[in-house]
Structures are given as C-alpha cells and as structure tokens.
Length: 72
Image 1 (spheres, helix red, strand yellow):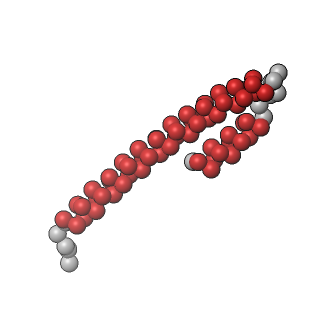
Image 2 (tube, helix red, strand yellow):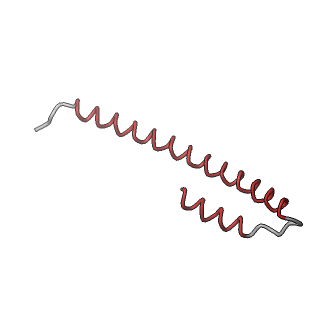
C-alpha cells in the first residue's frame, strides 16, 4: 500500500501545474499532499481492519480444530 501510494504521490506532485510564485506552489503541493496522505491512511486502516478480522477468524478456526476430538 505504502509503495503504491508513494509512487502515485510522486506522479501527482510532479504533474502539478505551475503557480504564480513559490508560496502558491507550496500551498498547492501541501494541499495535494494532505489529500493523498488521507487517502493512504484510509486505505491502510481498511487493510488493517480486514487483516485483524482475518487473523481473528484463523485463531478461532485453530482453536476449534485443537478442541475437536481426534478421529482414527
């Protein structure tokens, strides 16, 4: 996730249109960066939540498998 977002951020920031002065350019880049970072954080949190659920399911399945009677 981080690598993809970093490459995307680089591509987008480099493509920003020129501004009238450095202060305006800095403001444009900072706003764009904040939006990109928010997108990354949202995706990362969703991934983390999905992984948390997936791991909890695996733990539960393992627990049930450990408690199941052995069959011969």
